[in-house]
Structures are given as structure tokens and as C-alpha cells.
Image (tube, rainbow, N blue to C red; front, side):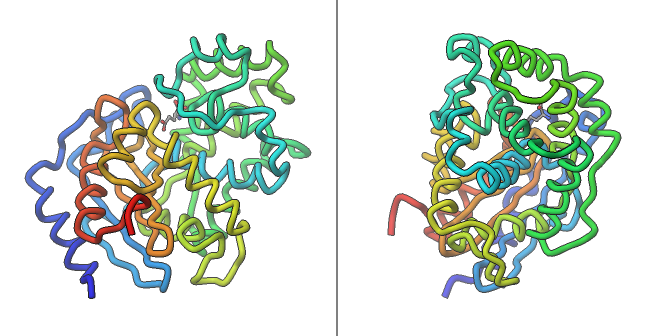
Length: 309
Ligand code: GLU
């Protein structure tokens, strides 16, 4: 039997000399001042075993990992109709590219690049005030992680709002193509707050467990989405979850995953486990450098892959 705790401990120990590698996101002061030498990892298996290493209990800014969960909410509200608003193809360009959006007449490539996530947030907003929509996303995270003390870092949200020129450009652009139904300020207000949710690796791994277990959280018994929907969300994470580093992540790790500029990555080993890693230093694609390496080590040592039995 695989000793998962030993594997997680080994990864933490072997990577320790490299802590601090990569470049911390510096577009807002709250992320720029995060100590780059931190590393956390949590593996939660579908039968409920929890394996932690490093700073797995420390909350960090989940940023774009939130896009997996707003996609789940939007699919629940609007079903497959969401694909009229966003595509399902890898973007092959930077997470906040505006050029592609113009070529494609305001229909973003996929729900995980910024433009696509903003379009998805517009769908989450349907029938809600921005405040209610933010509350819905936060409640969903608490429900999935089965923990009440998950909060939004208001300073991060405010800084994003104050400096989010490019996201405003993307949103205005989509609005000009009539691809957003709500005022840009409302949509981005929700978007910046979902990105500013702070969670630990342990909480995040628990929140993602339904994706590893055919749509049902095996710890609480709650059916979150259907088997087919979990499979499809995983497919999108695999093909689009790491921006233009998605192919590389699939090659090295071989598991669906979603990264955020806060240095977190959520990865899903279907039928086995949900994994969250956090290390703030990013690689040139804006994905956690050591987090990606840790996941590659985990996949190699456990044999977990969606490409091999
Ligand atoms: N809040 C960030 C932005 O929209 C999220 C980017 C990310 O995590 O990749 O710029």
C-alpha cells in the first residue's frame, strides 16, 4: 500500500532547499509582500484520509482557483447554456490577453482565462445583487470545505479593484460586444472578491474533493454535481487550468489542475484524491513553480495520472 504521508513528507523535505524560488506576484502589495519561502501541501483521499505537509493550514489568496468554483455555480444555474458565452478551448496566450478577445468578438476562449472567468461571474450574478453573489460564492466554498471560517481578504479585493485596469478593459470590451449582462463594476466587484477568498491547502483540497469523487463529496455525502459534470469540469481544468502552461502541466503532472497567482494549485486525481499545494513563487507562465514540481513528484510517486491505468 502507498504510504501517502511518507510521500508528502518526502516531497516537502526534498523541496525545502528550493523554497523561495520563483517570482511572487507583485501587481498588488498584499501579494507582493507574501514571504516566498512558504510551502504547504494537502492530500485528501476519497475515503477521507488527510495528509498534510509544511504550511498546509495557512490561508492564502486562492485567486484564479476560485474560477473552478464559480464555473460550478454557473453550470448549476444555467446548465450547458453557459457555452454560448464562453468557449472550451485552451487559449495558448496569457491569462489576461485582450488580443484574442477581439479576434473572437468578445467570446472568451475558456472559463479559466480572466475574460472567461469574468463572463462566468456575470452568469453567477444573474438574479442577485453583487453582495448576494459574493455571499453565494463564499457560502459555496464553506459548504464544500465543510468549514465556516473561510473568509474573503477585503484588502486584497480592494487592491485588485484599485489596480485592475486590464480586467476592467476586458470586461468593458465584452460589454461592448454585449457579452455581459450586468454593469462592469458589478461583475468585477464580484470577480475581485471571489479571487480574494483566503483558504488553506487543507480547506482547498477538501473543497475540491467532489471533483475526485464523481461529483459527490464523499465526506459529507452531498451530491454537488452529476458524475458527467464533474468529468467535464476536470476536462476543462486539464486543458485550460494553467493558462498557456496547461500543456506543460498535463505533460509533467497528468492530472486536472487549476492554479492561481497567489501560488496555489488545486489538482484532482479522479477516484483517488484531491490535492492542494501552495508556494508563492511563480514560474514564467504565472503558475506556482514549486507547487507544479511538488505535484509532478506526487504523481510520479503515486502513479496517479488520467493518462495511464
Ligand atoms: N485576480 C487575478 C486577476 O484577475 C487572478 C489571476 C490569477 O490568479 O491567475 O488578475
